[in-house]
Length: 339
Image 1: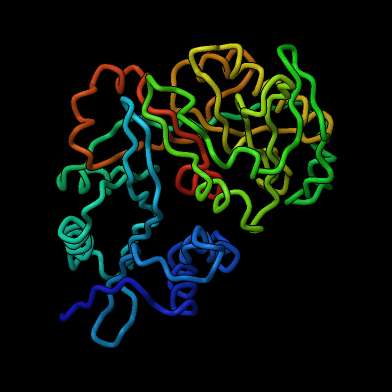
Image 2 (image 1 turned 180 degrees about the horizontal axis):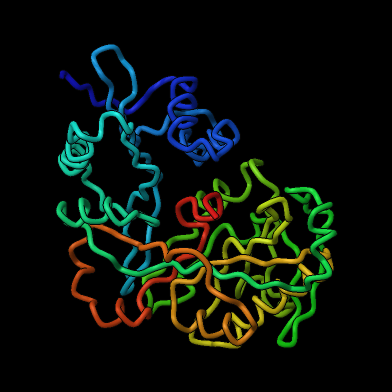
């Protein structure tokens, strides 16, 4: 069968294909995250990084989606692409389309690729093409108060920013609600001893200010400096009919255990103020695991492996194995959408 590899299909074709591939999702709502490059002036510009396989009739048989990203490590910044939603139509999987797609990706992508949440079978195929695991994102949850489950059933799925407190006092400092633009130009990574994914102006605006969902950003209230020492981003979702608070993203100096403890404690307080019964988040580092466990969080689901084809990172086996290597949150890839 003659196959055609393209970077663009119509919006209607894309939605129809993803409705079949991921029937549990609202793909119409996520079209701007998954298909358009809204990082560029929030315009409906097609993401040229995406790859689709078409049959001779122009019907989509497979896809692999990408968005531009970056990481900091050892004093250097590297531009990468973050891959997600690699999917081959079920009736075509025996035709080795997955292998054909991976071969095409390897032949055409000059930028290193990262991905998260790869399934066991797909991981075996990706390892054949030079990908390797650099970490795992564990999902955690905490029941804030069982008495809040009734209000959790009644609360809206996507609470607006005005519903959130403007100032929250933790044991180690106050957090104030801010506009995401306040942290749009980070001068350097928060953690120079880790591989830390970039949070530049374009990423933060695309991920949290596109209007797709109601994200709420808080930063440590430091009257002595305009520099945002650390921040976190939350939003609400419905999970099995109950409104949950999701800690989507956070940045602080991980070497200071009290800094991450303060962030998580403040998020718990926000949930209490909103009468939200459950908080959900993700962790890729042992230090954060320990703080979450100390504060009563439990792991849930299957860890999401973080993989890449960056050969230069393969040698860091010990920190990777001991969960001391990579800082990733649910904001990287589409972690919060697949809870």
